[in-house]
Amino acid sequence: MKWRVILEQDVETGDWAAWCPELPGCTSAGVTEAEALTNIREAIELYLQPDAINLDPGAVTREIVV
Image 1 (cartoon, rainbow, N blue to C red):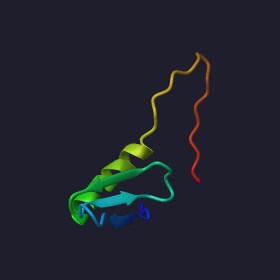
Image 2: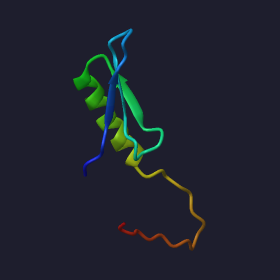
Image 3: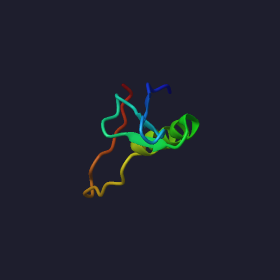
């Protein structure tokens, strides 16, 4: 799966910020551009992991493809 990632270098520190516009709040950073890309990849993977939820007995779970 491909995601658009925005990278910006901080003019004062030289560090890199990264975020994915399609995933609100999914951000990361790194000292180098490569490190920022590695970190945002991990952040996206974690963002997309389903949260564990407690369901009542008898609840029905389904999955859909969008």
